[in-house]
Length: 320
Image (cartoon, rainbow, N blue to C red; front, top):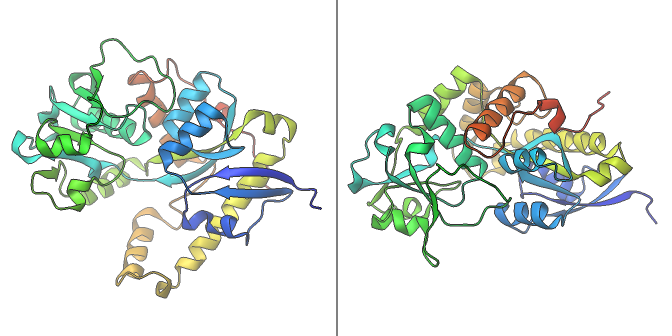
């Protein structure tokens, strides 16, 4: 019988964790049961509200809020999900929204307020495009994954039960929508809905080249009692996640594995812009700037009540 510590890990079904899922990479001293059959919002809710997993990929914005409220989690600097956000602001084409400042005073939909994607977009709109988040009328669809006490002056209300923010923006009940994923009207090529930034990729490349930020969406959180009982666990997991990611990068070198005609060209373009390791882990300079920016937005938008030190957010990792 194995003497390894058995832990459950809930995360997305990503190429960079596939070696952990399949067992070709194993963390030293740990037997992992990897759970991937759930959406991000369900995983975050079950970890934050129910403490159901030993380790979980977790919304970075919700983790900041949880840490500020001293909830019993500690993260390792493994960021399994990143995404540029300029391409996820959608508008009803009949609402005369041509530029970001046209959003001021408008009704803008959200799945929920606390999602990391929404936090990034509100911060980018405010700091890059002069659109204060408190000058927008926000309408959300879902309950928050973490309990929040938001500023009274924030205009935020639930949409009626049974309605969908995606349908509401298409039908003109909402003027615009910020969403973590591509919305159905865009996938369906609904002529009533368009992106606020049609040339979003150009904006995202310029944003990265100017700021060095490839926005972190999720971190990897461990229940605090596990780290207190087994202080070696964060390092073991960190090293395993790094090995799994490097194995994924190696696998991607063969373009035959991916059914995309110009996959190799796209990979080379990404390397030219973002470097050899865009999903870099750890607390190097680029990730610190990323995290400090997100923490600033979280503070400004009322999700946390004060600043925290980046090092206090993460478990100590010993890498030989």
